[in-house]
Image (tube, rainbow, N blue to C red; front, side, top):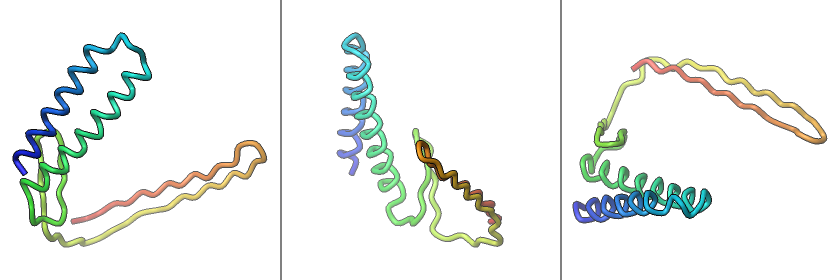
Length: 104
């Protein structure tokens, strides 16, 4: 797993260097490279979480700061849901808002 982390870190660094060198090519090219960087960074973070906490059910973190827990007791959960439907021939829309408050 350490080799996989090193390989992903190397790939992210290569992509960032390439982005800096090829900024003059155009916005579409830069956007494509930024998407690749984001995808590789996300994979890297997932691998690191699995490496540091292989048996934990819940892992959080990014950019070198990670935490994990196996079990937690949820005392109270409150929330509300707002659903707003706006029918229209040209621009129909549905807005959904969900807010949850947890007491652990």
